Image (cartoon, rainbow, N blue to C red):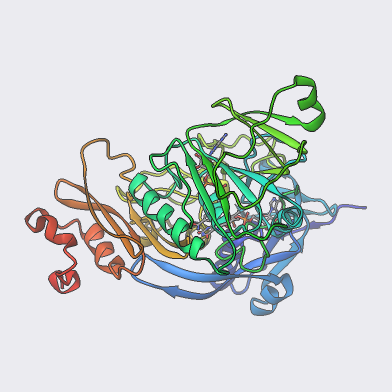
Length: 498
Ligand SMILES: Cc1cc2nc3c(=O)[nH]c(=O)nc-3n(C[C@H](O)[C@H](O)[C@H](O)COP(=O)(O)OP(=O)(O)OC[C@H]3O[C@@H](n4cnc5c(N)ncnc54)[C@H](O)[C@@H]3O)c2cc1C
Ligand SMILES: NC(=O)C1=CN([C@@H]2O[C@H](COP(=O)(O)OP(=O)(O)OC[C@H]3O[C@@H](n4cnc5c(N)ncnc54)[C@H](O)[C@@H]3O)[C@@H](O)[C@H]2O)C=CC1
């Protein structure tokens, strides 16, 4: 097919939250110009029901929409559903799979990230990123008696809570669950919730088993995708039936402080003649999975070997910089993302980046850090468009307020979770203090203090403290004189600081 050369002005690559937000904002700024949104996925992600909860905290839904919906809302946006196969930055041009090329005045790369799998190319190792990979996971789960989940971040936390009717072996490197979001205290609070709520269970006759290898209370309570689609987000599992074939609700066994050493397929395993561990012995085991053989065996660094039906690698993401950016001399961050400065510019002229693909390399506010999250993808996409617009008229703009304070609101184990600032004392060294308030089964409040100032907070449950704490972190007021009263449940802290 003959190449068609279009003279686009602003080109955005990626139909996820970062790319769509960037294109929308460019369309508003330049109503008389065409904005090209080039995306490999057949649907785009749109932010709906946006709510600014407080100065920095925001909540919104995310909808998959056909690209025509976006084009109808913004007549100057043209969506091209085709993957970019090559960028020629010196020629200010991208080449798409459909044989076309598009010249840009300014380009914003928002191609997201892909799962960083523990073992690439192994058909028994699944990553979850987009709708297709989530559906493939669901399909395989319906037949699975036991799976292994590797990783201790957002996806793993959500999966262990949602999966029913299938034994789950959860292998984590750390000694407590949820290391990307929580410290050991919060992890324990959540663990007890998982044990109690799930055992009381949605359906009374179902039984839950929960064991943590190496933890103090070792006993249970009774209680393949190509990854070109956009990343899933809040409530991604809501529409999926995450149910295995068995009749119990939960059966989770956690192996702490270990990594995957080897993965053997059934045939390889027979040759090595290793003896698999059976599921840890306990009296109320709800099901006996007396299979002699499993499709795949996982050897952990603690020497244990588990057979299972498949493995979910929930082990983080890698920015999508290959292969289409190959041959361009981008500066990359340590995590492999495109380095961007405080104006969202990459190291190459007229090329910006936003969302999961980029690595923020500006001097951040003392209470902000990058995390590859939905909210940051939206904020970066919006801000990148503003920067592109300003640069077009020869200006630069001040960093957007949303980068002043890290703020994330989400849900884990059915609890509202708010994370603010240096919520895990990230980068503060030993020079900090923690204050805690915890009511089992109800709320967990932790604040991180340094020199009498609040630097971060973890709020689990309906604490109603987010707005006040957000202000206290932002204004860096000296709180030394309040001491522990700060978390006294009998003091209405909102009134205190009004
Ligand atoms: C299972 C799961 C649950 C999550 N839950 C949450 C949550 O609860 N809260 C939260 O804040 N965050 C959550 N996240 C993270 C969040 O989804 C991402 O941080 C965010 O969606 C990233 O947006 P993005 O636009 O940068 O990238 P993506 O959404 O990955 O979009 C990238 C886009 O680029 C396109 N693309 C890729 N390569 C090319 C190419 N060569 N040519 C053209 N187009 C290309 C893709 O088709 C896609 O449209 C979750 C992620 C996952 C995987
Ligand atoms: N509610 C929320 O906010 C959610 C956010 N997300 C986001 O989606 C993205 C993908 O999620 P996750 O894959 O869970 O990434 P993640 O970054 O949240 O967690 C990755 C986990 O894998 C572990 N890990 C990394 N390499 C490993 C290895 N080789 N062996 C064992 N463990 C290893 C890390 O220690 C970490 O616990 C992340 O950006 C995450 O923040 C995902 C789900 C929910």
